[in-house]
Every structure is written in C-alpha cells, then in structure tokens.
Length: 139
Image (spheres, helix red, strand yellow):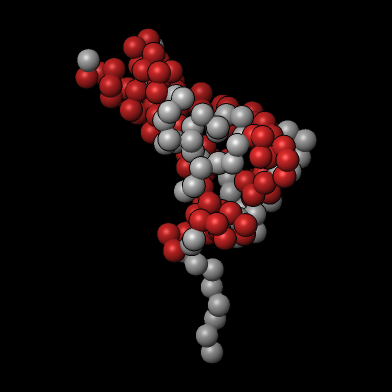
C-alpha cells in the first residue's frame, strides 16, 4: 500500500507551492524560495500565502526572516498581517535588528554599503548584511 506524502521543498514547483503554502510546511518553504509578493498585491488579494502560513504556524517568524526575500519587502510584509498576527511584525523586526547588531553594528561603512545595496538586492536579510560586512572589511 503506497502512502501519499507531501513533496520535498526542493521538488515543489513555485506556482503551486504559493497556492498550497498556507497549508503544508513543505510548500511554504518552497514558496519562500520565490520573492515575497508586493504590498500592493497583498492589498488587492488579502493576506496571501505567507500571512496564512505564519498565522497557522506552518512557518515560524524565524524561518520567514531567515529565508524570505527580497529583503526590501521583508520588514513590511509582517506589517500586512497586523490585524490577524499582531506579534509577527514585532518579532520579525527584533530578529532583523539582532542580525544587524551581530553583523554590521558599529561599522558605519557596512551600514552605508547595506543601504546602497538595499534597493536592488534580491537575497535575504542575512545575505544582505553578510555581503555589506564583507564589502566593508575588504575596502
């Protein structure tokens, strides 16, 4: 007798992953591999997959902060959920601040690099901060 199992995150197609992300952890992780939807799209279509996944604890805020991208969208994304997930924004903000303290705190040059990279950087918050720190120490 075969047992049906959810696909591994690496095997999930991005489009169905976003559609199914609110219900299955594997799909939610696969959906995080793609860019977070823009705030204007969320306003038109409601919470979106990540809101439901966070509210239903399919994803943790930590996973959202560590894996979500582009990083320019990440700080505002949990704010979209304030009505149904009020602690999400505060927790995500605290995690992002901790990453900044651990990676580039006290280094004005690294902060400047991070700010310059921010608009076009397509990676995660930890990747942005690590890149800024690396560039600042290499100059």
